[in-house]
Image (tube, rainbow, N blue to C red; front, side, top):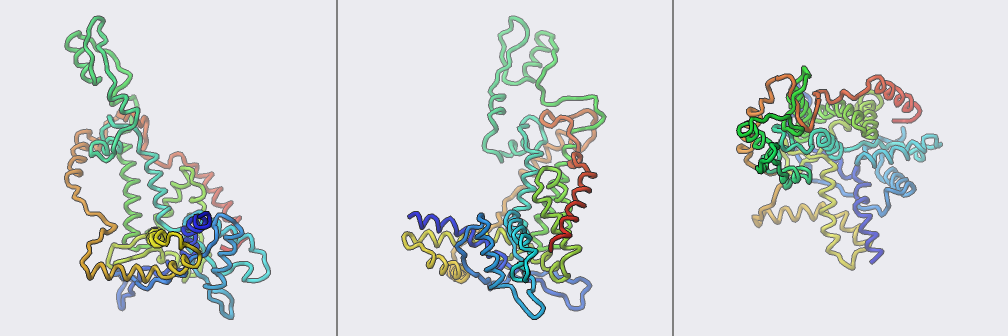
Length: 432
């Protein structure tokens, strides 16, 4: 049982190691004859997926990852009279960095084989985009149910959050007694208490907790918050759309903006890899390899426009499909049976899809079509009621005091410039 558990733990990483080999069958791009544009908007799906199976190694161990890279170079990198040809190996950012660092460790070796030439590493897009969503969440998702127009308040209005935080729940259940001496009235809402005190006792007192504060600032911080959230959200939507349309060139442009967010919000390793990618595309890679890195990043299962997904997301789907077969082996799980199944899941998946199609079996797709008209109208009402697109100096949200629309205001551009120059000097010493 211990041996089987150890094997099961290696399957996920085993598939990842050979991702760059069996995932490169990207969505084919038709070349227009006689057209002004190089690439057509018509995409086709390549069904012949070449699976090279599992390697029973642990990528977290440096020695075993070195063995994996040497295996890939020996088995799959073309070699001619002029040396090794280049191939692209993709993975998440951590895998890309670990592989790159091992390759640089052997940069001073005597032979091309020892230097691991022919391997170019890149990080894939699904994990990188998820990190940008995490940054968005970090900036805008705060406990602000009473601040109309914030992300949290909107999600609460649409019931997109199952429950509010403990702080919100405690505030909702809190009781507010009348502050006039001798009055027994108790209210659940501050506004109701203030209205009672004004009408019954002619009492107007300042409150320390209000849904909206005004300041002497000349800025409308509510408007600034709204503009910032829209701009960041449009950046994320543009990135997702570039992936869906298979537009690698647009995606590479967006990564230049993403680099600034990675750097400003403490994700230094992603900033490092993104800057390295930019340098490779514009300076060090050959035109052929730069073209491959730019456009060979997507997978289209069904064909057609706007149906592409990142390669690493497709790999996650393959991992899940493979594990469903491995779990069925039970006590028969061993390296031999696992390796056999891992090389045949492409055929098995295709057979199952054809069988389901012939039998008329309905299958849930990855895209969910939901009528959002009601939610959109509700959000429009909130925006109009809060007048978020009108500038009114002095407004601000309780949860976001003094918020300004420049999300990169914390960036020290002199320090960024020095950091970039330092990285360029480092990269002159190695092959990138």
